[in-house]
Length: 236
Image (tube, rainbow, N blue to C red; front, side, top):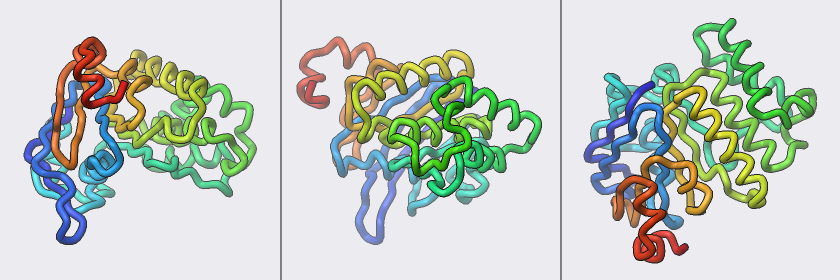
């Protein structure tokens, strides 16, 4: 398990700054959710951790300064990113997609066990293992993207809008599986979401971003239990 600490994070696209001194603390083995409207900086936050945008500030995973590393090295240090839109390889089979995730693992024998574990976490995928990813449903593709990330045994799992475009029933199923994975694996997770209801039920800690700044931070239970905060920042 590894904690993540972010201090004074700024990120920009060209001359336009998208994050303005963001501070976050993610407890080791916990689930932290970042909420906010479109344009709040949620996706930029994940890209900053992975060094795919220009950024300044301290990003520390355990005792490793991620802000001093390039994207490939960050992945090798145990950061897995499930981007918005899932990012599966549509012409590869389900099994071949999981094998791509195994390429990032240092221990191939352990990666084979993790592939078997991914099918246990997501039994739907086991039924579709020889079918091309492009033929899977949206929910199945999201499960495949998460399963592929888990095969590499990450220390930190980043997920961008995992509920996007999915039916409420599928979202509930996906978050139930994530809670099980969290309990069994104790992987530190950072999710960004627009939909608050499902995310709040899975989170330990919540941050709300507004135009690149932290507007609210606290325990998930505090936000769930405060009607004023829910109306002001979550619209629920």
